[in-house]
Length: 193
Image (cartoon, rainbow, N blue to C red; front, side):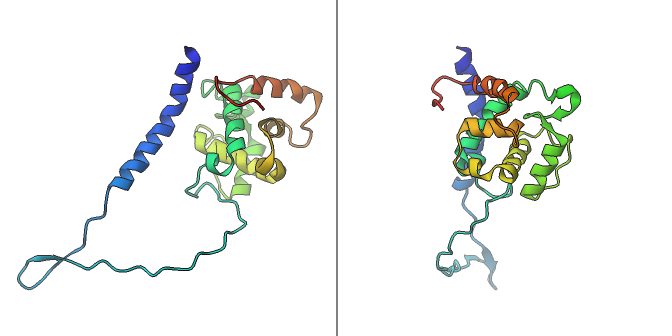
């Protein structure tokens, strides 16, 4: 029962975002009106937009300002971030860790935060913005992009969890316990990794 409630609580923000996008799609722009000499409104003809040839895709990875979500760009990283969030902040209930050295949804240290921000081209202050889940996740993506881009693109959830805490020593013995705890935060129906 508690797992179902937990899944429902996690899906509420996604449903809210979906509802906003659907509502934006239903709204149609109003036609431009021009008053003529007899003060009768007439609708201006719609301008035909020129069709441009398709552009080749760029090799750059979008940053947080892009319209795509982390789940669309990095589905494995999205799963890893959920597991890390559940472990590190108990899903937002414990926003300070490591004796005050780590803050936010993912309990990120200041150096890691600054490196992630630099990688994605943002200047978000630590700890001021660590209470913003979206920013925490994008900073983590930036940190992974800097330290383990190969695993960000084609790694497993375990690969990313190992490199979240210790990017330079992911298989150090004390990291095994951390990975075991983080991966233990699963919901019913989650895929096995």
